[in-house]
Amino acid sequence: MTTAGERAVRGSVDKFAQRRRMLALSASATIAERGFAHTGLRDIAKHSALSHGSLHYYFTDKDDLIAEAVWLFKSECARRYDGIVATSQSGEELAVRVSEEMTRTLRDEASMHRLWYDLRNQALFETGFGDTIVRIDGVLEEMVWAILTRHAELVGRTIALTPPFAYALVDGMFQHALIRFIRGDVDAIDRLRRECEGLILASA
Image 1 (cartoon, helix red, strand yellow):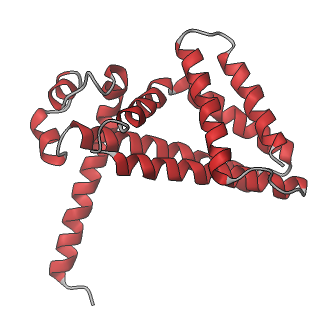
Image 2 (cartoon, rainbow, N blue to C red):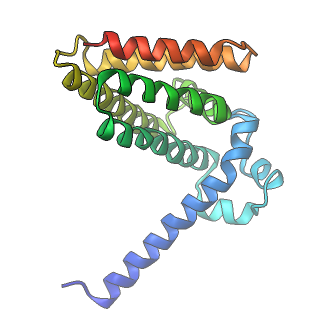
């Protein structure tokens, strides 16, 4: 049976986690705009409505804050495909709807995706947020595999890829589209749509 003391501790932990989440979400735009290398807790406080004291209380350092912000964003991105997977009635419909969501997030949230790749590259040199990178990669790989598994079920065929290989293909496709989009390539969105649909349709 849970005691009053245990409930109080749990409530305190939940409130702390909720506050961390709120602060990370509030700081994400500033972090995404400035990038990992040019961002510290003081910089984030200066360019947002957050106080340096509150950031320092809830986060160990900038690595902790940035990792939390990116985790919240990328895990939420992955969940957006759950409904598409659950409700698509044909392989073609699934491919079209997934590609539409992927191009939408590229167009509307490029700065946050750029921050994700920035953070992942930094993890090759620093170990402070390696666990977060592994968690995010795992969630994204599961997302890709769920999409391709559902496509295979809808078309009645076997997937021709392994989960890691499938994720590597989708990740590379999206990263290259992001680079082209940031550089001003006007065809980046439509090209990603075509490539995404083609990859899904050819996966089984």
